[in-house]
Every structure is written in structure tokens, then in C-alpha cells.
Image (cartoon, rainbow, N blue to C red):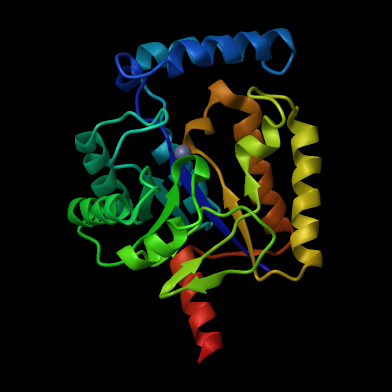
Length: 271
Ligand SMILES: [Zn+2]
């Protein structure tokens, strides 16, 4: 088993939300629930207020530095359309796409459009135009899909998608590879609530169970989705959990690859 790590970029700044959605006030309500239920410390809450002044909710560079240090190749998924709480501008997104490509990251799209082919295809074309890449993948924001979404993504021309959660090996839809994934930060740390419901140790135990299941099922790849937003002192459990996860996999001698390398491996096996 090898591991594939990817990061969804849901936010860049706080101000991008102020006139568009209620993410920021809802987040502070959630923070107080987490404080009073003992899941976060006062220091963590103060860091969250600090973020209002620095106006920073992305941690792309710090996370990249950690990944490079641990030799973890990753893929970043970034949006070019707005919806369901993803509110940064196309201009901001374009700047980050160039920056991440220069940093040596693989960059795909964090998709908003999932309902019909025309919209999915237009979103694909828009990202292709902005990123100037010939081949790239996608993950839907909030992993929203319907019966036709994956087939329509394949038709649009995506090289891969990783919007399906499940204990399955990668499989092909037309020319597109679907990479089902198993570990998502929010599903571990928050579920079944909408705020942090587990502490660090509970989160690690839950994660080990998932890894063991992937090993038992003999799946070729373990898929991990971690949001860069949580790689900060404002989300101590989340950041500690991610760092633990990478170090745990390294201690288990698990190799890391990105989606594009995994596709080459899969296609070599098919030949
Ligand atoms: Zn998202």
C-alpha cells in the first residue's frame, strides 16, 4: 500500500466571506462550543481571533514546507468558481495557482459544478485556461456528486478525480481515473458533530482503524484529504493529527506518491 495525500483549499482570507456568506460568524459560534466542551484551549481561541487581524485562513506554504521536509508529494485542489462557502475570487485563485506550480506542487481543481455536463465542462475549460496545464485532476468541494458527475468529468477531460469516499481501489471511467479515498480530516475530528468532537488521541485511534482496514483489504492506495486551512496553531488538534499521521505512515515504511505518479503505476500494470 502507498499513500496519496491531497489538500483542498476552501479559504484564502476571512474578508472574502464578509459580504458573501455567514462562514465567519458561524465559525466563532463553533469555536465557543469547542472551547466550552474542552476540545480547544483559550490560546487556540485567541489564535483564531488573531487570524481575523492577519486576514489569513490559508496555510499553503507552511504545509508545503512540512510536506517537502517529509518527502510527501501532494496535490492541491483549488476553486475557480464560488459556492457552498467557497468565496475567494478568481483573481486570488489564479495568483495561488501560479505560486503553487512554481513551488513544485501538483495543482488540480476544487470543483463547484457537479450537476450537468455543460457546467462541469465550462469549469474544466476555465481552470485549464487559468492554470495553463494540459492535464489535471479534480475533487468536488464537499465531495458533491450525482449519478452523472463522474461520467461528465471524464467526458470533460479530467485525468483523475478523487471525490468518492470508500474502501475501493482506483478504477477507470472512460479515460479518467477515479481514486476513492478513505481519510478526511473533518470526518475524523468532527463527525458526527459539526464541530470538533474528538481529541487528538481519539482521532489517531480512529485513523489507525481506517489504515488497518485499507491494509486488510489489500488496497493499493490509501487516500488522505487534509485541508491546508487547519495547518495552524488555531487548529492545534488538526495540525498535530496531520503531522502525527505523516510521521506514523513514515514509521510504517509507507511510500507516498501523488495521483499522477499513481496513474503511471496503474497504467504500467495494465499494459
Ligand atoms: Zn472543499
